[in-house]
Image 1: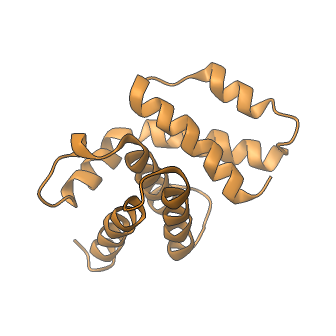
Image 2 (image 1 turned 45 degrees about the vertical axis):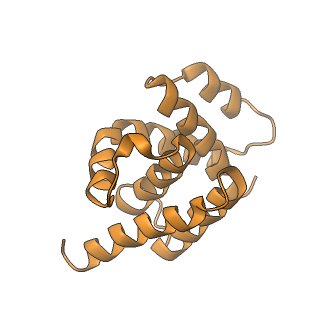
Length: 137
């Protein structure tokens, strides 16, 4: 499994979480018990998913502070899940993936799983957060 596929798995779990608002250990276990996932990918999926949930409220606040003219509740759930996945990986993850790679992966996930305009929105929010972080905001 590639890191991109592992991110897709985390995204699917996070997307479900955005609706249920509770962790689904059954679904997580199903993914992790899959024969085509090696131990490194299992660790990545488990770590990222649990981390996103643990930091969910903080991630929501960060996203909300970068929204212009609408609220968090108006974001498509898939876009929200993609943004939270990317922000967690940029801000909190122990995996040291370059920010540009994480943003590019998020844009690709938006192109694959969301609306035709979502990739631009996702890119804009992530760029705003990263540029604010760089500028000390």
